[in-house]
Length: 522
Image 1 (cartoon, rainbow, N blue to C red):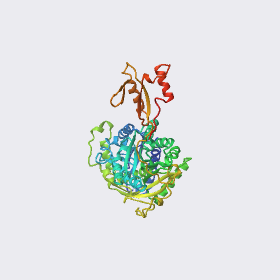
Image 2: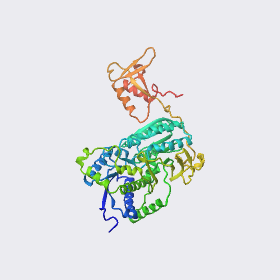
Image 3: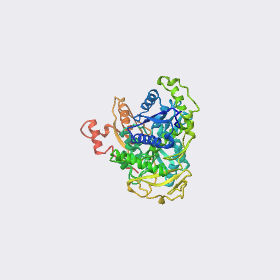
Image 4: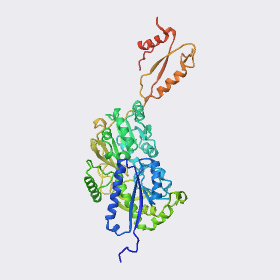
């Protein structure tokens, strides 16, 4: 009699929700397929009756599409777990399903996502807040005491801000200004915000936004000359993790940028996987082989974590879930389980070595990496140092991922700054530039004061200008992407030269710059 003949073969159906239009989504699906292949080829798993079957769905980066895909998977495929979704916004929306089916996300990093809100949510990635210490340490190392934060206006973009502000404050760095950009902002809006920052003379920035928005953002930054000598840019790991798959035009616009990302220690298993990854693309005759990034490794490890837990529990878990979640129409009637499912609890207790290193979850998420890698975009993406959770910047790590030395900035490796400069940018005092004042000639005439009305204070000689035309003019000025200060100059009959009409003379005075001459700025 065969060893497992008394166990019926069982397939565990797993839903996969990714943005297949994005490079990471496409690569992550491939990595998960390779994980299934490696699982099936493992002798210890080969004798086990439980096999994982993935059911991928394309969310196209849209939260509602991700939710409808999840519902369809629960109804039609009777999935017992979900891997994904890719973004924090999608994960938040799927939270309503999470009390009925385990959700494992390898890329949703917003701090607001937690097991307190959703006991069956597992974050197989780092919390965004885990990097704020590294960012603050870099700012302090470069001697920057004042800077600007530019972030995306979304759950992902806003989630890191409280802890980042605190970390910078503790390092004696002042955030003089914050610029918020909607994820779907048009290029003209991005350009307007950059003009405002230029008007403030800001030159040191921390950028936290999705890679798709960052690609468009930095192209505009470069076009406006803000990626030149004297500027300093730090990007968070959401951008730094995807530098290898960004469009070349975006990467060319980011020359001189500093980024941080979780450090993945080398291993024989990771080396073998990388070889297999490259060979798979040779087979498919790809012209350019994409570099495996950390999200792909976490996607691979997510499959292994789920499979290991399912094998440990056996087929009973899946049968229990299938009975309770077999019909979409009955979803609302499925009672929440505040303590989480047995499958979730088993995953949370697991400790294993994955492609990304040692996997151990705490409070439903990956623990803070022992080290972050500091990278510099300068021709190519190169490593210039590390930051450890002991708040040290170093150029080398020992085998236990502990800083060997704390170097000076000069020892960190050759840092290429914007404009191909090798000198650390010095902070400029952030304040509005003392630009020229725009002087506007205003006619003083009897009647129609609702359109333009001018009143002179006989004591202070101050001029008050009101009316519909003035309101429209001011509204147009307010829409400019930079600040403009105005002076309204009354134009009376005494200003009229010989001959010509009132308005002809007003225009002629502007041309001659007699009445409206720009005074010298001290």
